[in-house]
Length: 102
Image 1 (cartoon, rainbow, N blue to C red):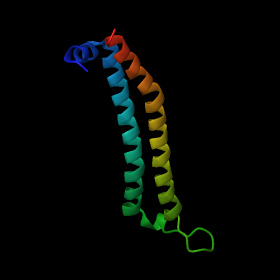
Image 2 (image 1 turned 30 degrees about the vertical axis):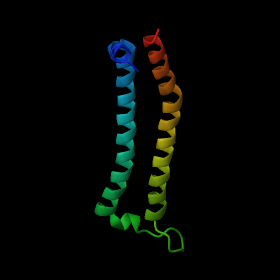
Image 3 (image 1 turned 90 degrees about the vertical axis):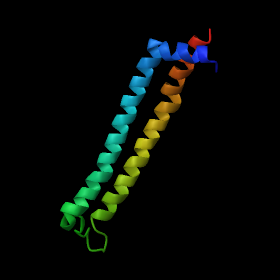
Image 4 (image 1 turned 120 degrees about the vertical axis):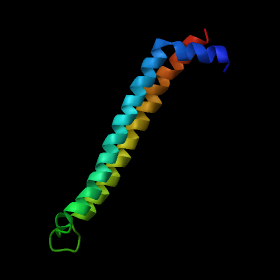
């Protein structure tokens, strides 16, 4: 890509809005995922008795399914982000590049 095309893309208001929207979305997804992880760690640190409660008559405690839930939650969050990035974000960036190369 030439420097001229790069400058046209960077100056395009649609590109600037796209970058802003993508950055905000990425930040929100990262904050929500981090909150799930750190929330679990804080729960371990400040209320271990809650996580140590046994579920039923077995040996499994409440902490095990909650920990697995955090992992599954972040996998789902990643899937949501990738799905949006591969559809909406890729389509928008391709349209902006196509417009700049006309």
